[in-house]
Amino acid sequence: MRRIVDIILFIFANLLGFSSTAISYNFAYLSGLIDTAFPETIGEDVLYNDFFLGTIITWAVCAVFSLGFFFAKGKERYLFLCVPVIVPMIYGFNVLNGLAALS
Image (cartoon, rainbow, N blue to C red; front, side, top):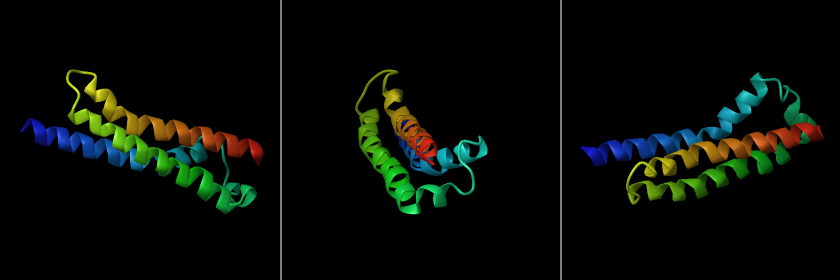
């Protein structure tokens, strides 16, 4: 039963991390960091390559790193689950902040 809970936590953390692209973009839009004309201002290809692809690649690296959750012992193993959620969001917010300063 414990392994099933671990697998569900692992899948949930990585799904949330995969969604970090949409979460960070929508949060930046709702907080007023970017506006509706943002993709046209900086160019859709720049937004796609720098933000969307960069965040997904960052998540993929962190998802591989989060496999350590199954091998670590003790409470520090939960840090491995936090990595695919936190790191792509930080990356996404930093890229959006930099792109917003350019526009």
